[in-house]
Image 1 (cartoon, rainbow, N blue to C red):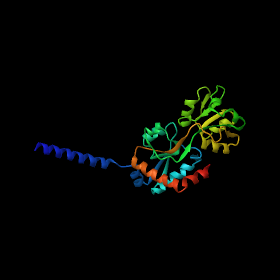
Image 2: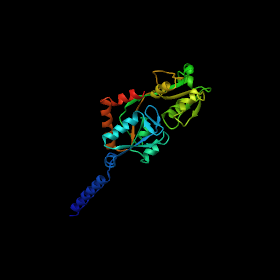
Image 3: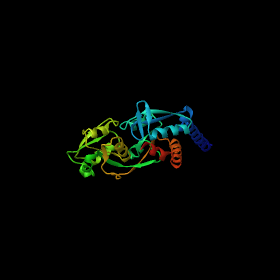
Length: 256
């Protein structure tokens, strides 16, 4: 009799735990569908992915964020974040997804989840066109008389900290004006994503890639989310569809 009572107690406890888990398991997908609001974290300072032009958000990932929201019959609420604070903002539940040229890195994967990659990039230098032959390799850049400028908190700074030991490092906080510092001779070179180098050399004709067509490394751009597998699977399904139907490719052509 005691044995049957014990088995009954265990089964009842398991059913109770299962019910509690189901009741508490409200996913981000459920929240977005219910509230009709998609919270998108973005730095809004990284052309061509995201950029705040006065009061208007622009860029590849801005348009894709709106498309993702449309697929959910929701509206986008853009939430300002920064490269140094992105991981903390994710853990503080300030947004449902971070979008804006984010590189897939294990340090972020440790606290969140990445979508599938939608663009492959790598680090490469940009300098004044008349000085481009001076900075065609890390060996040439990594010298005491070279001023290397870098924005804080992201993969650019991590790369510079790891590989540039002898040059003078200038940490500059404003991504919107950082390339002007090179043009105005306040810095000599910046190492950043190839897609940004390509765009900025068009926007500022006095600046040129010093290693055109080459990068120091390779990695993918993706979207960063909290640890919610159901939400991740939805984002992956949506992004895969947009890659296959040509939407992503067209947006890159539009903004580059």
